[in-house]
Image (cartoon, rainbow, N blue to C red; front, side):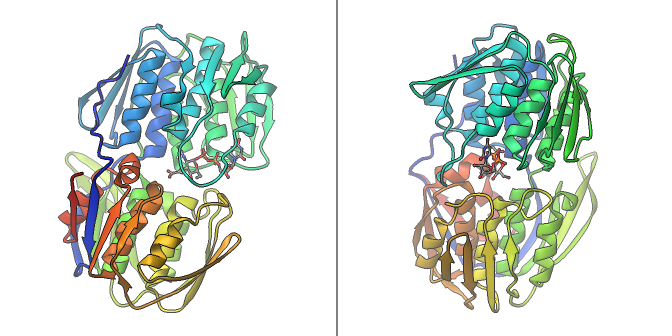
Length: 439
Ligand code: EPU
């Protein structure tokens, strides 16, 4: 079975970008990849049709749709920004390797399948190319709720007659483990407390959907989530607007930061990216938050102005509300053309510096030692062919191309497509010299 979300295979495409004059215009920030994929998985928790709006047009939504269709949901896209997932109870709780290896978020079917259907067979997840990303916290939390796990031949088999509420203490606020435990706990027997829960806006968005479905969750947005289980079949489908994507918003801020100019972003939530905005202001970017009308909806907006050269700052990545690791390639790129030396410290993914070699091909002056990158700013970079190694690194290459003399040609564009809804179109729409060439 496959979903009918479609999605082109654009593996051979490339993006050509040139240093552009000041950017000027307005764009709408799409819904968040790291929210919508989990919202889609939550449709497993109830019978009937879950309706999601503000869904970004990205490849990961298509892949997640295929995975959920394989498991037994009917998945359709009645309009470009809506996805509907219908659960007729025809569920086979198995996620095979050929789908799971394409997307890390496939791990998010573990909690809802185990909670509602009592059994899961899951190939171990793949996803991004930045080092080992274990799932021990997911497993440990679900074990405390009564699940039993076996691992053989690359497959994880989990079983539980009925999960029981438990007190689960995380020593690190894992986004994926928090989401899995919440989705498992919402139909478990009794109360679950997650102490040390992740507080990311995307976790909040998932909890809000679960509450609209009839889940009983308190402490949403705090480090202590309390979930009172309802009956296994007591949740009902809901319609939900996906929260806007703070990382895509940050990409447009970085683009205007290195190009100069002014940009108004609609459906951009400054409150969800406070520390990033603070660091950007320290670099000399003027950012103000407000509201604006988008059709008949009042939405949060941000206005971004950049004039003159950026100033170097030091930044470290941390779980929310700290500066997210996903912003880091953008920050390193901005620092590559800032005045002075900035030190960027990665605290989440040890291997997430691969894009640095690509930036150095563009003339960036960067020294990495362990978790640290020291970036000495240059007035301009110099265009060259580069490769996108993952989603965020790919977006950073586009921003770097805007800061480089000559042409920067980016391959590995399929990585960018996993998380960005028409990055080239949106940037071209505000005056960037950027074009996508097909395979
Ligand atoms: N970790 C463990 N054990 C676990 C779970 C996590 O050691 O059981 C470690 C990971 O190895 C990593 C750190 O904890 O070093 C963070 O992992 P977390 O579970 O918080 O992240 P995730 O759920 O796997 C999501 C996003 C990532 C984003 C991180 C951090 C999705 C699909 N992915 O991953 O997004 O970087 O949170 O904010 O939501 C991206 O969008 O490009 C991306 C990689």
